[in-house]
Image: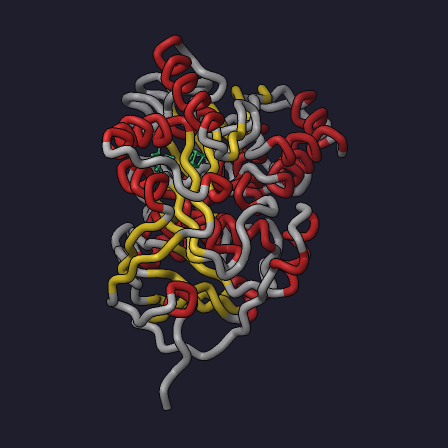
Length: 417
Ligand SMILES: CC(C)[C@H](C(=O)O)[C@@H](O)C(=O)O
Ligand code: SF4
């Protein structure tokens, strides 16, 4: 019996392994790659090409936002002018991280989405085929409205069971990255299926899809369902435009099975994302800084979980908290989550990438040790000579209070120290 097509095959409309040219439904770039794409686009301008379908294009200022020096400010000024002159959607400094903005009612199930950033796989959580390209390819999309794809083979990540205790979607993400390894998904699509995937809230799905690229994968897809619809409608998406995908049995190149009940809080130790170990193995490791935020874990629900742990207490180490978007910031403000975080002694930064890329606002010094809710702990990324451990918001919160790495499983409103 012929198995059903994978989600990637259905959305791209061709069999795995084939090459296709497709117009894109959405494309976005940020202040970093957008500025580079603008340089590349000059070549198309010389050929008298103008921007095609600007209503499908977005420029989002998140990476070095607000600008840190006059070189950055000049580059951002040029791109700001270009995007406005050409009628693209422009998201100013303070709006938040591109992937989060696109997940807030913009990107829809079944769409072909391309971002000039490797974590564009995040939008797979909404049932879109969403992947990252380089700046030159983005310039090509501006000039033609489309691009080429090789339809990827798919690996299924079959999730069963339910998250309990202090285990969070981030711990599941670190588990599957460990299982696949940092190149185990190269040029594949991941499909998250099974009861555990269907039962996972959209915020958690976004965390899982976000880390697909850490295995080398092109995207990480969930089937859109009633939860997806609810999420999109909350953000004001037009109900009529939301198409839901029906789950079917597909034939996958390989399968990974994870029981959510068996996963415990994890830590990716320096300097690889697939170096995941139980947090308890590193309990007591001294840290100099905690960073809570990013496109992996800077959403309102993440901030809320963090705040629930630090509320009424004081952090023992400098702690930088950066909401992923203006919407997440506003919700955290109106619900008291931000004041709990502020009163606990944390620094709250404007929505955006913050120190994730090591560009500004929280870069570590040589020999310093950081704990972060981000998706990458590559050597020198967040500070030359620094070490970074990756974890969930709850692990970050408990560790911030202790000034050392501690598992939330050791936390019962206080730690036996
Ligand atoms: C700066 C940008 C090109 C980069 C990416 O594509 O991922 C960044 O967002 C990152 O997380 O390393
Ligand atoms: S938050 Fe970090 S990982 Fe996400 S897009 Fe920004 S720099 Fe990249």
